[in-house]
Length: 432
Ligand SMILES: Nc1ncnc2c1ncn2[C@@H]1O[C@H](COP(=O)(O)OP(=O)(O)O)[C@@H](O)[C@H]1O
Ligand SMILES: [Mg+2]
Image (cartoon, rainbow, N blue to C red; front, side, top):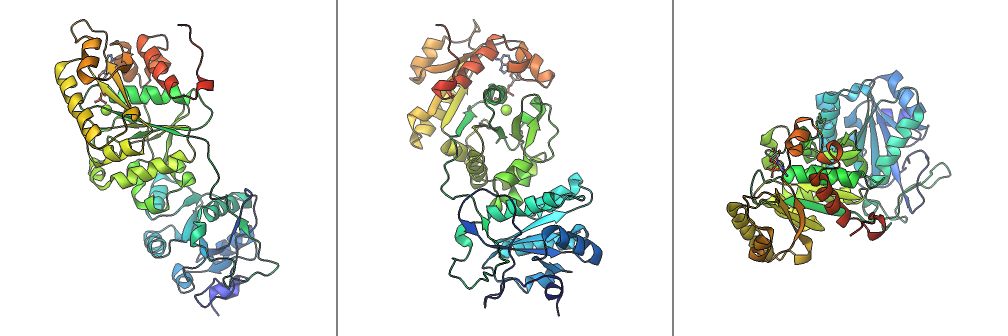
C-alpha cells in the first residue's frame, strides 16, 4: 500500500481514469466549475497529518514527491502542497521538472519561516505560492484555491471524462473565462537619447496616475540593463523581472502581483529591472508582453520605462501599449534622433494615434523653439516639461516631483499628461 492510499481518501487520477480527489470547498467567485485534485507531500508523519487535517480528509498524501509522480496522468489539475520538509534544493528542482512536464500541476510550498532566499528559490522552481500557515487552515485553503482557480480550464478534462463524481466530490468554480475586466491603459515612455528624462517622466507619470485611482497602477522598468526606477523611488526590490523568467509560462495575476514591490508613499506597484545586468539578455519581448498582458487583467494603468534604443523588448512594449510617449530634449542631436525614431515606428506601422510627443526642458532660452521642433517633426507636442532644479532635488531625496514639489511646473506638466490618459469623467475640470 502506498502512502497515497494509506493517507488519502482517494488516489489521483491515472490515465485509465480512477478516483479524483478534489480541492476542499472554499469561498470562490461564481462561474463554471473546474475539477482539481490536491496532494500533500511531506516526509514527516506529524507534519503531513497536520496539513491533511487543515485541507480536509479528501486530499491525497505522499511522503515523497516521486511517489506522487507515478500517479500523475496530466489530465486533471493537481495542486501539490509541499510541506515544510520539502524546502530543499532537490525537492524543489523535482517540483520544477514536474511543473514543466505537467502544465496542470502546480505547487504551493508551506514553510514555518519565510525568508527572501527561500521565496526566491521556490519561485525560481516555479512554485506558485509560498505560505506560512501557522495554525490558520484558511490561509492554506485560500492559497490552494487561488492556484486551483488559475488552472487553464481548457486543459481540464470535459465533464464527460471518467472522473469520479461522488457526493464527497465538491467542485471548484473557476472565474468565468470571458469576464470583462475594467479597462487598463498601457503607456510606454521612450526616447532615442539617453539622459532625456524618460525615467523622470515614467516615475512621475506613474505616481500621478497611482494617486488618481484606487485600482492598482504598475510601473515596469524595461531598461533591463541600466534601469534605475527602483533607485529613483528609493525602493529595495525583493523581486525583479529576472524572477519572472522561471515562472513566465504559469504567470497569473496573483503570482505577478507577489513579485511587485509597492512604493509605500503612493501605493504604486513596481516591477524593477534585474539587479544583475546578466539577466537582461535572457528577457525577451515575449516575456515582457506576457507581463503586460497579465498586468492588464488587474491594473488601471501600466507605465513602461525603456532604454534609449530600439530593441526587441522595446518593440514588444510599443506593440503592447495603448500609448507611446516619445520624449525629447530641445537640442539638435535629440531632435535628429527622434526623427529617426519616428521613422522607425512608422515603418513598423505603429498607429499614429498611439504616439504622443513630450518635450523636456522645454523652457530653456538656449534651446530650439518648440514651434520649430513641431514643424520639423510634423508632430504637435502634448506635453512641455520645463527644466527645473526640483527634478535632481527630488531624485536625490528618492521622491518624485509630483509628491516633492507638486506646485512646480514639472509636476503640473506631468499631471496634465496623466490626466489626458484618464477617462473623461475622472479628469479634474480646469479653467482655461
Ligand atoms: N525637466 C528637468 N529639469 C531638470 N533636470 C532634469 C529634467 N529632466 C531630467 N532631468 C535630469 O536629467 C537626468 C537624466 O534623466 P533620466 O530620467 O534618468 O533620463 P533617461 O531615463 O532618459 O536616461 C536626471 O539626472 C535628471 O535629474
Ligand atoms: Mg532611464
